[in-house]
Image: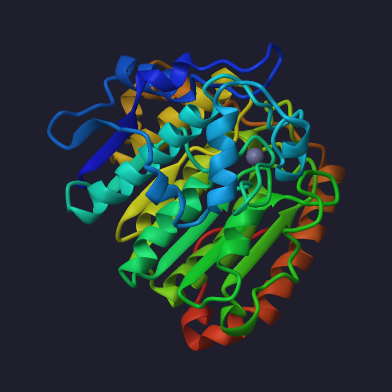
Length: 388
Ligand SMILES: [Zn+2]
């Protein structure tokens, strides 16, 4: 069994921004408690690790010192007008007491994961408070201030490791893509709601495939609003496994945003955690080592259940048949079974519209990206086919 590590810090839950700010500060706490209740911390294979704040030197491997200096000042909780051009003090990235401490700690949790994997202490690590994929070199954006995913990848790049970054979040992983857009040593693959209906609006379209040496190493699967499980999994299986196999990474960094769930108030997808679980199982199967980050998620119950399920998958804990009973085709059960979302009804009309749009996206990727990887990306496809 794989050695797994869950990165925990009770301090993360103690921060507060202004009332009504949708960020769930106790995302790690909620996930941790649910996993604990369900007995998912197996002492033989799992360690729960505590993290410390990322150092200034860690942050400067990606962010500018000017920007980090502003974040340090912002930690007092008083915003300045001139910071707006760095994205600080906006509705999505407000300045509040401890804002820098919180984001340094979150980044520290991700970097702890990197070092556990590097030291051989864990093969799969989960930091629920991670995946701040919209933070730029010198700006905050979309609830993100410090880009922990980029910091992790940069860390591995210093050791010449090939890193595959896969992002399943309602929003495009724009700044992770941007940071590695011109290299063939990092591949970024993002599945997200299309920019035609959701932030960050301007990026994440299928024709963005990287530049220079990086051409073919950035892959985008924009999904129409109301995308349900089946077409998402069809597109995921067509795109992700062949490219992961062709790229042959040393390590995989994945973001599994719970804002892609139907229950999320800030996006328009119709995915259930059953689809996220299936996609994660595939990610685990191709990852020699895996650092999993939480990403977005603005509905607490859905987030905790999706991520507890993710942790169960990392820990090789599967649902036992005796845990569930079927009533009229619906599963009912305790323990792990209680984490599963009910199947989601989506009209035939919507389903067909989504299939058509995703069919076009996948064909574009197969035409523009796959040929760059030769036969490796063209092995016979196993798994689901999309009827009609
Ligand atoms: Zn998101």
